[in-house]
View 1 (cartoon, rainbow, N blue to C red):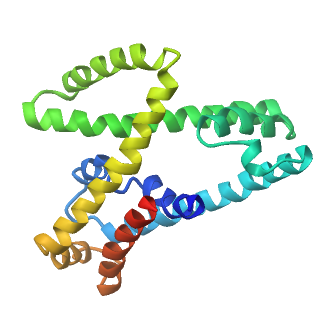
View 2 (tube, rainbow, N blue to C red):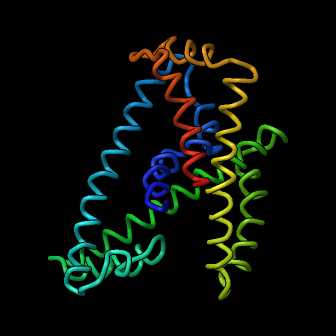
Length: 229
């Protein structure tokens, strides 16, 4: 059932559903923000980019597999193998390969830095709110220990295994479980989903109704079930 799991969950993670950064970013919004309009722009932009990228990536991997007489799964795996083995091979065979390589790895670096900032901002914001200290001081309090741990844990020969194990349990179980717990608490325990719907519709250009409420409750449950399968 790996194919089902692979198809069901990427959009869940790419939109950062269940991540603390969603709450942190939302705390900076103005009171009269068009929430559903902004959400639709982000959702469609993200999904559209992923669709186009997926077409290009799988087309290139299919070409490589056909040339080598192998299956696509044998040509490239996931994560680091795809980014640092398959993509460089594809780019090296493209016109202006050197320029494309520089642009690709520059984009990858920017993506990594922005993802790092979004994750660290959650903890920094929480420390600022709890201790009432300036942002620079809160960043140092969080950043210095994280830097030391990263240098000692991830720069060794076992760093990649540590990263894979941490990512496996946090992403596949922690984040998904946290999002499911939030849905259960909001919908079935405190029963505040209609209140949340009214809050979304208050200043939004696109109004959500019972269809949205059904999708929120059902899709999260389906994602959790498929992950277990």
